[in-house]
Length: 151
Image 1 (cartoon, rainbow, N blue to C red):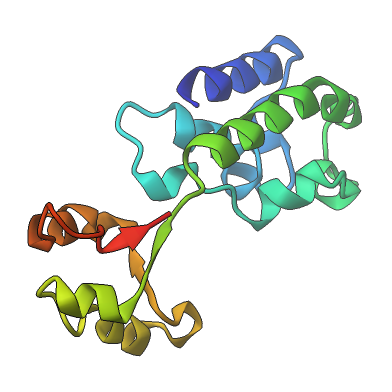
Image 2: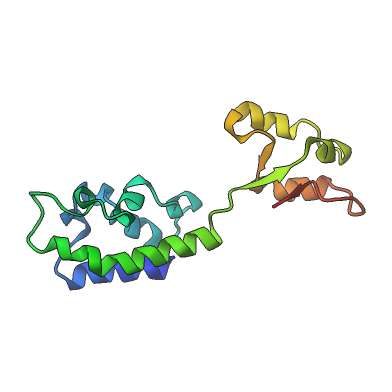
């Protein structure tokens, strides 16, 4: 992801532009390249935001506006292959955020209530646990039994 972000920034610079030339300046879709190119990005930095998704759909207002420098329109063709590769890579390697669990299995493995905790936290994620709890769950699980979650 870092090298793809760096490649996108390189292409922007090579064509005589900066991230701040795009509409929304550093908060633009191009600002995403800076986030993923950082030394220590968080997992949340890799999640493409709404402007990144709008740019992938080719929304003109995300790419340029009446105040944009001349020639900025051509950057869509220059950056689109890199953006598509970034999103493909993200979906293959980073997009799994939740593991599904069954309350009965967790209860039998000594961790009752964890699904209820997440359900209360976010009703949209009914009967799911954050995959970050996998270490906790596996430590609680008896090795001879079915694991407490599956992907």
